[in-house]
Length: 214
Length: 199
Image (spheres, each protein chain N blue to C red):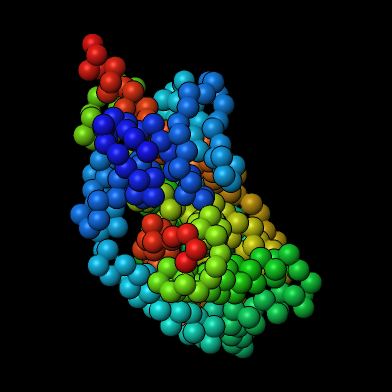
């Protein structure tokens, strides 16, 4: 294989699933390119990626705040009402002396999901204003390090499992935060599925090239 | 013009950029991160994390995960005990979810990682390269789901703490959380570029 220089390697993509080398081709707006070997999605092209990303991450952030402020669920047990919120779940682990689990949970279900959305907002805002060359790079690197550790979706499934286990104890009421968390998780899944980090890198490169040409 | 071998191209694990494999001092040309810098001890880092995870998985199964104390009587249940109890109570889907998340996924992940780690050093499996990459991708995707049980225990413990009826997390919760944490680290530390054809 012959190439002009190292930068020409940007025209190639290696598949996430099977590590096959694919050549990058121009595709229609809104469509996706798939791997020639396993059919996994390589990248998508979205001409309004910045606006979509900004809107999604802002919405997700608002729902995350709501999910933390209001009770997730409430249970009437032996005449008294008990409720939990997302932060309370983590704090009660610390109260009971489970510091390691509390620490791990705090990062997995609170700090990392929050960070991802804040970073996404900042990132798309900076790209929209075409500023912060270095900062966007740092943010993208940070984002790729924390994304595999965000487990808000798994926490949501855990709530469903806990609901079934709790039926034996008493009357359960589902709170506002439960629905807010559900929407947050859906947005989170949508973002991780539809916006790959490599697409943001490509976008960043295009913006930088535009800037240089002017 | 530079001539390169296609096998020499690697993907940056951080930003997915295609890079030329230059041996020990690989730095990604796009994001600047080091690409598998621990080349001199290629699989050992992953092995270390994996063994830690497997050791932590033993107490996770022996100690109680959930301690329910109702009106003076204490009831402790391990992970398997909890699954069996749920199954007997008739909540089959939930029992299946917990069984998969806490038993099948961790054990499967241990086995796949052991297989991959051995097979990159010794010609053990004659599996195709593509299949091994897919196997690795699968462990990365299903891995975090074993945290379900820990989260469920955290929710139950936070919600039910009255003087007469109380649910507490058990020792196994800590052990299990540590085990999952280290399996995730082990999977991340695995060097995908070591997977070669017919080895």
